[in-house]
Length: 226
Image 1: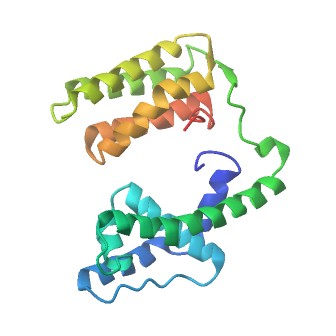
Image 2: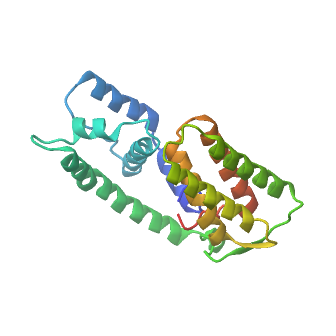
Image 3: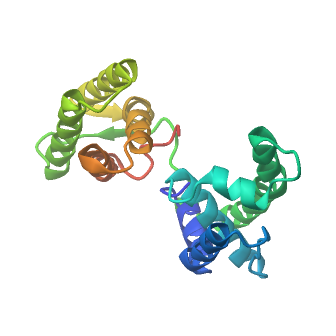
């Protein structure tokens, strides 16, 4: 959603409607101080959705511990971890999903035709002499080499799988014409997996760089299946 038009603008506008980091800092302070577990949301709907999006992003990038958050704000007496997760889903995530879906539908309905999401079967012609192609290949090769050399990649089966996927994706880029969905299937999934596994360090930086270079080469819709 973040990388599509008009949906990327929709999520960005929501999160810019409120100082999400300031709100999150207040939440973290409540958890650290052990103060009563009560959340205070911004009153306007768009600001509330922006704060909630910032919260779930913080879960995703691991800047906020979801377990600590859940046990502080969403635990009833006798609840175990599974019950806390269920409480967050039913009381927070479901309502955000409903409100966000309605918001997106309104944005999409008012968008100009050229703003529609690219078709999943879009085919692009690749100029193998272009700067964008060379930059993308270099970024993918660097990522592959860093994974191959990584001594801290504890799951060897996952490591082998990611290397195979990236190698297959690189071969696709050698063709004159490439189906965007096929390139996404081969490359976007392993890159996202690597970003989730390595939150910092050289592999994280190389994965971000590869993502950016591939987006430049194939267009903003290249990651469509995910």
